[in-house]
Length: 227
Ligand SMILES: Nc1ncnc2c1ncn2[C@@H]1O[C@H](COP(=O)(O)OP(=O)(O)O)[C@@H](O)[C@H]1O
Ligand SMILES: [Mg+2]
Image 1: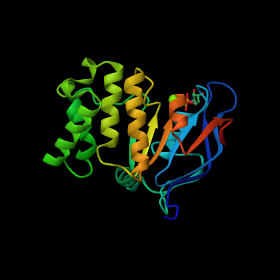
Image 2: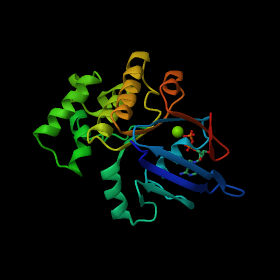
Image 3: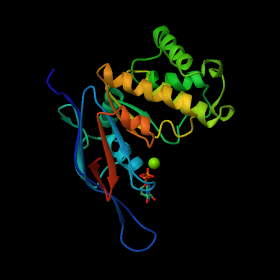
């Protein structure tokens, strides 16, 4: 099968205003191409811009320069509504801070992924329950995020991100709050997704994440360097 680009980003520049002095340039021409079936790991010290990069790749933040393509389409230049449609079509996002809705149960948080795309039907509910089961949080289905541990919230957030089987999964330190066994389960799920034709970009420092990856990059001085 010829390579099929899922994501292509080039020349990404992102600056943040500093309280005093010149703006901080967090991304300085970052480039990344990810093909179908690839698991890409991004490492880098805290504050190096990994979350910023994922936010820009996921169209949640605009870059100051550069472009992002999903498949053949340049999506970074689209308007707000079109961007959110493309996000729904292409992306699952596991946020570093989970971003579960406090007023919804674990199950309804997972089903949020369907609410704005396919709609919630019996099949989606069944699939959501299978995911919660697989990651050991099924008995928490009716709990609200505040009643869950950080690790449980992280696993619920992961289930939400993969519910729709997105062609591209962006995962920001998805094992950061997990013990070894639960972390390994998430990494296995990421590798399985890649093996079954998805594309995955994961920020992780776990050695077992890098070992299972097709490419490992370090984010340094605003650019990705192959490791
Ligand atoms: N909204 C923001 N406003 C100002 N500075 C920000 C903002 N978001 C991130 N930064 C800064 O950008 C740098 C990179 O942050 P981040 O992308 O969160 O790094 P990482 O995920 O690698 O730890 C940090 O210096 C951080 O303080
Ligand atoms: Mg981060």
